[in-house]
Image (cartoon, helix red, strand yellow):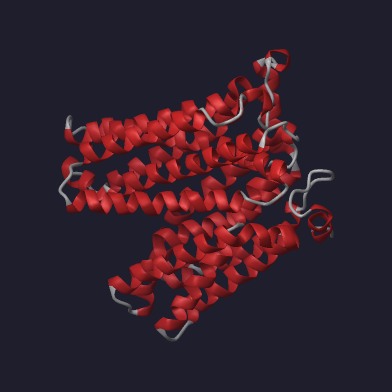
Length: 416
């Protein structure tokens, strides 16, 4: 859909979506950076922390599922504002539950709001990012996802500063909630009104909720949804597995010190972020399909090197290749799901749900299996999933008449 926007309006729209991706990352890192303090304040064990995370994950999946209906009813502009306010409230409630009421139940409630809002905004901000791609004719969803990574880095850094200066969870989360609310209203003012976003829903086009629900469910009956899901499942599983197990894999599998394990995870994260920053032009030059195939090969090689390397320097090389390989699977899967503007929300929601389930549920499964066969051997599961993701990459071929990027060269590069 081509929108009649001035250059200034387009720049403000793009900057607003960058900021929303960053705000989502900020919220996640704010929670994650204070888990140790929350655990002490509530006097809970790791099993109870795991149940908290499970609750947030379930709420995230619910948010993903509801996002399609929210988009159809309210449009992305109002929908994103509401979703951001929900997860900002969740961040604040976590602090109140921790330091005012010392209530496990209240913190879980805060995490439910946090997960619900983030899940919903994830679909909407990706739909908007895909709309901007089509407007500018370039692949930029990877760069949007890089801003999410920036948000997590900034949030983690601010969390470390909060701990260093002795700020309790309540003060820290309250300040961050206010920052996120400010971002919500500033971005709302710069996102085009709903009648000119990806999924137009002016008064004449509103449909009965049953028809909107039918459209949402229809995406789950399309084979392409599941093929894209395989791409996203493999890459999201490998990304989530790295976040939770890479550092421990270096320590337990390769005998590295804990600080070296943490550095290995940093190498992975930096590599992934760098490719997300510069990945758009590569996609425009070579197309989604070949980019995903090459990255799947890099992920496979990196994982094998990480598992089998005889020296720590080679393990670091493996971590870097692993991070680069998984960097674009999720954003390009989202971009492909949004190829048809009329069905973008439903398809993005379905594909994102597959990706999120694997991202959230995959790492615990790896932990359970590793108790029986060892952590490095367990990582061969990620090797198999990376290979499967590469084999399914053909599903990311742009639909007829919807290719973004460098005009004919992009469409042609994804043929076959």
